[in-house]
Image (cartoon, rainbow, N blue to C red; front, side, top):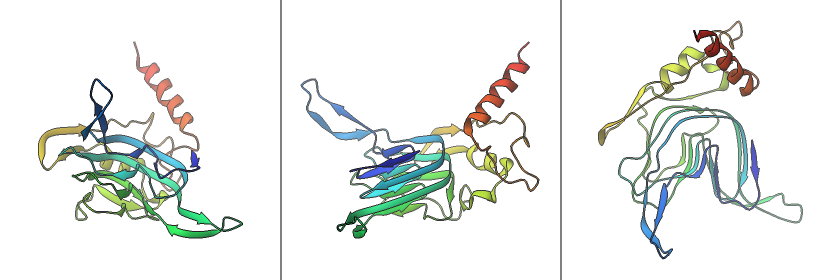
Length: 214
């Protein structure tokens, strides 16, 4: 997937993770944003050319909800080109932007996102520019690695874990990622956790599940 144009923020899943905005019956916007969770996502082969910020999952994080999370996500093979380009041949960067393997930059909302249970590409910081969003660097559920570093089992250990927001213990998300067979899409070294085309994987899982039906 590729995105380009007069775009301020872009992500492999959302441009902004701020949540939904509420409106009055007369169409006027209310001041608060709600929601903002992004969970259970897979992003691969994402390219963005935008002006302000881009991330593997969200271009911009932060929300007015108190317990927002970005979790259970796997990001690989992304290319982010951010900034304001000028000059006659459009080859001069007048202003640099922000890039992140999971989040590009925090927005202006009151609260940050907690990032957990993610795999982020090694070429980028997990959060390009963090004001209030965060992740626990001592916790192995947020991993930074090259594309070939994880076998299928290793990915499952991260994105299929329970995600519990530290300020909201009752809020739990469990991933449900499955494959047709544990080793079907691995090469002899145990790398390449996904096939060359995601459609290949979808078809195999569907066929496998159909075979199990009585």
